[in-house]
Image 1 (spheres, one colour):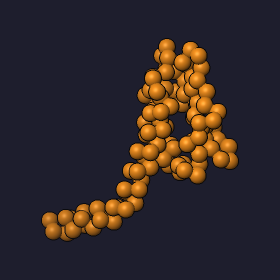
Image 2: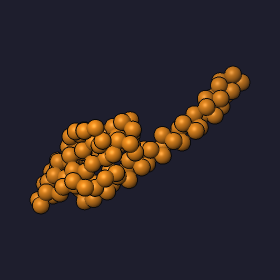
Image 3: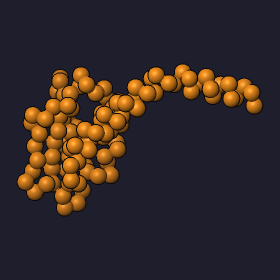
Amino acid sequence: MIRRGEFVNKMAKTREIQVLKVIYPPEVMMKTAYLFLDRAYLHITENENAWTVHFSAKGTELPANIGENFENALIAQSVRGIVYQKTHHLREMLLARAMTSS
């Protein structure tokens, strides 16, 4: 995650953060953005190195710490992906075994 270029409007109606593509794959980025649709309007742009997430307030102002919360959610989604990759074979085997024995 990079913070240079972070912008906060003085009225707390808009904010933007940049997310490095080398750290977070597109799936993690989109899953995280989906989690924030109820909190703000999101617009995502990209260049060759990063995505820029633009947050706009749905009401009078943005929720406090929305950028930091988004960063934490990116990490959480990344870890979920890692856990899935490492354990999905085991879950498939357990499910197959359960279906066979019933």
